Amino acid sequence: MKSFTAFRIHQAGKGVDARLETIGLDDLSAGEVVIAGHYSDINYKDALAATGKGRILRRFPLVGGIDVAGEVLSSSDPRYQPGDAVLVTGCGLSEEHDGGYAEYVRVPGDWVVPIPEGLDTRAAMQLGTAGFTAGLAIHRLEHNGVAPEAGPVIVTGATGGVGSLAVDMLARRGYQVTALTGKADAADYLRRLGAAEILVRGEFEMGSRPLEKATWAGAVDNLGGETLAWLTRTMDWWGSIASIGLAQDHTLNTTVMPFILRGVNLLGINSVATPRPLRLAVWDRLATGLKPAHLDEIAHRTVTLSELPGVFGEYIDGQVRGRTLVDLRR
Figure: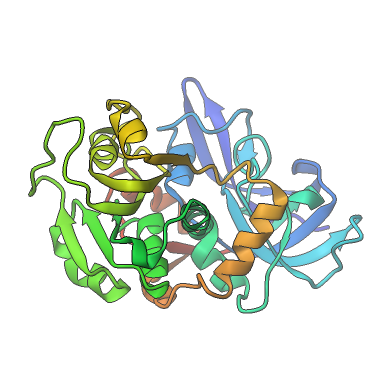
């Protein structure tokens, strides 16, 4: 195979040196399936890895990018044939295995998901890990009894990739969605996605009692910290919180009272080590009943591989709304 372009991350002292390079297939991590990449995307985790702001990579050098969708070029795994449209999200990409920011990607067969009918490679990466995470959160909330008739649900960090998609998916499912955001100017955007109510961080009283007014049947939390603690205090009886992120803080200071007096569930969402049957089931739902109605508005920007190095700073600074596609063929 000819050489190709990849965005590769090297260790540089206590930091990283991330750059576009020309490499060959033999430079990639081992795997049974070679994918000709069509699209990837940008997640906050990708920005942490590419800038060295977070300790994401467990070995160096590695190709960045935790997601990829494309077409099978070759496979020694009989489940996949050349030309099959497939995707890979998480599974250790850009942590201990070369990732999706390359024209060609090689992965183990068990990581590969056939793109279900209703999606193509572009739509699969408009969703990507963010969409899969939001879908997994809703799947688990519903498995634990959260339903539209149970009461309002809240999505924190609502303008981010996971948050935007969760608002859209929940609204499409018939939930009354409250969107919590730190960006007051995003209210119109969130209402277009289906939010019935907008809360702006810092503009309402969170209270400090172990139990506050029982309000939410369910929650999708991207923030952690003080916001997650407030959610535990304000969940309704038998409500459930899907804990996804720590954009605000990794700590959680609360009491056991919401859990033992109101029966609240705190559900951890891990999109990397998801068992394969559950991963396939969630992707099937993302192609059907959970498919967002405003995908093109949420994933409104596309960059090329050559443009990729200049974009990560916006994510670190919290200046990004929605999702960004990476076109691997330009």
